[in-house]
Amino acid sequence: MTEQTFFIFGAGYSGKAFAQMRPQSLSVAGTTRSQDKFPALEAAGIEPFVFDGHLTPEIRAQLARTTHLVVSAAPGDDGDPVLNAAREAITHDMPLLRWIGYLSTVGVYGDHGGAWIDETATCRPKPGRSTMRLEAEQAWHALGEQIARPVAILRLSGIYGPGRNAFVNLENGTAKRLVKKDQVFNRIHVQDIASALWFLAEGDYGGVFNVTDDEPAPPQDVVAYAAEKMGVAPPPEIPFETAQLSPMARSFYGENKRVANTAIKALGFAFGMSNYRKALDSMWADGSWRGEGESDRRSPIRQG
Image 1 (cartoon, one colour):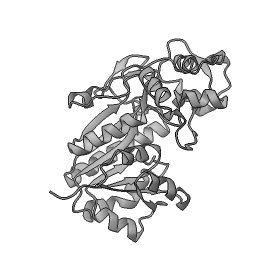
Image 2 (spheres, one colour):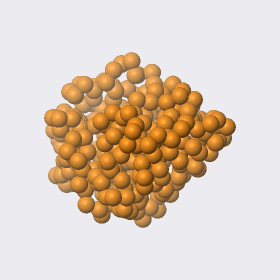
Image 3 (cartoon, one colour):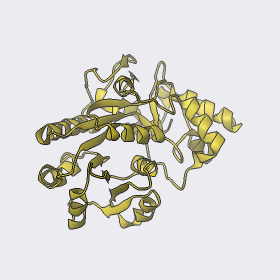
Image 4 (tube, helix red, strand yellow):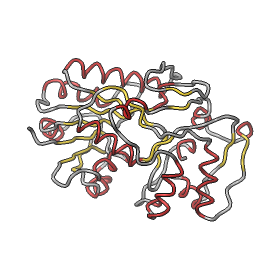
């Protein structure tokens, strides 16, 4: 069997966590937008390449050796940047390719009024970023059918982990407890994203998989739990109606659903961080919560 070789388009927070779980003998390469990020990728065990929307000869050569392709790049107004640049290479110049994994978002489901949903639920995303994500999912699925390769669509909930969590926000004074009646969010620890990717890649599984925890919860509860662990006072509760939020942050609260991870569990996968308490307990106990210099640029809604 051909030795496994992985290539990650968009080797950011999740991609680096994925590479750090690799066996030492396995090769992982990945892209970033700037050479300034090369040391961080190399520290995670990733051979770095710059991808600015165009394939360099070096990237083409690496793709020709790749067996497993991971895509963690957001679509834009012009569509999926990886498909735009690499569709022909993937179709004709990747003879060893066995599997594609695409990191998407549970945002493609839109609002379901707080109901439980799984991978069989109807997608009704709002116009904008989530609609573009769904279109990108469909394009990757279509490409997989064209080249007869399995494509795993991983729909992720709010990502957190070392350097990106409620402890960090409490420490730096940015934590908020916004309260909207009956509002809940799912979350996913970055370690479980990485584990799910390895599980699906090693099985060459295709399909749609919700990669999310088991316990959707109000965001203010997460902050309060973290504050209790730290032994500090939680920030005051702020009614959603009077909160000063950016349009993007406010839009997250316009969707309410409880997302189940039915499909990947049916294959035998087990989540290590199945709820926020378990994850926060683990990060607090081992001191990993501060991370290694990761900055958190996400919406406050996705910091839980």
